[in-house]
Every structure is written in C-alpha cells, then in structure tokens.
Amino acid sequence: QSALTQPASVSGSPGQSITISCTGTNHDIGSYKLVSWYQRHPGKAPKLIISEVIKRPSGVSHRFSGSKSGNTASLTISGLQAEDEADYFCCSYAGRSTYIFGRGTTVTVL
Amino acid sequence: QVQLQASGPGLVKPSETLSLTCTVSGGSLNDYSWSYIRQPPGKGLEWIGHVSFSGNTDYNPSLRSRVTISIDTSKSQFSLKLSSVTAADTAVYYCARLKPDIWFDPWGQGTLVTVSS
Image (cartoon, rainbow over all chains, first blue to last red; front, side, top):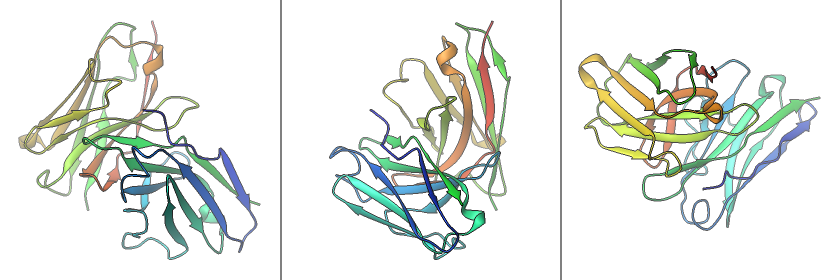
C-alpha cells in the first residue's frame, strides 16, 4: 500500500479558488466512491470536511467541494480565506476494511 | 459531542512495545469502529488499524504482525500495542472514530511518541 499522491503545497490569494488533487490506483480511489478529506490546522486534530467524495458534513463551509474522476479525487476550496491555511489530507477506502491516506498538502493563503 | 483523548508514554526504547490508550467521552462506543492513525515526521498519515465495538479488528498489512488494538467498552477506552518498535515508529499517533468504509471523525489531539534509547 503506497500513500495516495498529493501535491506538497498549493497557494492562492484571498478570494481565489484552488484545487488539491489526490491520485491513487484502481485498487482504491478508482474502485470506490469512498474518498474523504481532512483539514488540519497546526497543533490541532484533523477535521473531516468531505466524505464519500462529495458529501459535506454539517457545519463545514460550502466553499469546500469534492469530486472524483478515475483514480484521482480532488478538493476545491472556493473564495479562499486566511482561515483555510492548513494541511489537507485525502483518504480512500482500499478494500478488505483497509484505508490509505495521502501525504498531505499544505495550503498557503498569499 | 464525542471527544477522544490519547494517552501513553512519549518515549519508548527500541525493541520494546509502544502502548497507547484512547478515552472516548460524550458518546457511546456502539455502532462505530475505533481507529489509530499515525504520522511519522515528514511523512503522510498512515492508517494503523481499527477495532469494532464488538472487538473485531482490522490492521494495516504492513504492521499486522506487530499490532494489537483492543477495546474496553466498560471504560470507554480502546488501546494500541505496537511491538518491537524501531526509530521508524516515531510518529504523532492519533485516535479517531471510524464509520466503517466512510469516514474518520472526530479525531483526538494526537500524541508524539519517540522511539529512542
């Protein structure tokens, strides 16, 4: 099980939209609509922001959206705000009750 | 509101067993599974394994030979044991509630465990 591939860093100006990609294989992302995304601010616990590719839990900003095509999932943050500066991790179900995470992407608001 | 808090030694000697306990408050352990996830320095998150409220377990194949996760519903706790540790096991360890197949939420704060003599 190799980690899902994410860019190490993504940056954008306030108000812009950015997209974080998460690439796996046809054994994980490509086989299941079970991708989740987590936001982690420094020193804090990760927080669920997207589940099942596109679902946004109650209380999560509508500026966060998810999608998937083939073996790649994506997280888009619209109307970038200073509070969005954090690390973001993707996760996919990988079959047989196992899970695989991405290496993480650091989002910087310029 | 469910909250998780991991506790355990922050320093473990090589070849010994790493032990952590996660205490769940604000909710029942029923109907969910309970997981451990770690992040070594400079690396991504790694799912270690999980235990269901009934005690069934699943582990990361790469760690299966060294990992044991157990649950004590009477104490609202679940525990991780990782044997024969090396420096590669140095990481921030998180505990989290798992809705099987779907998501990990919430997560505990994370605790740094260093393997060093």
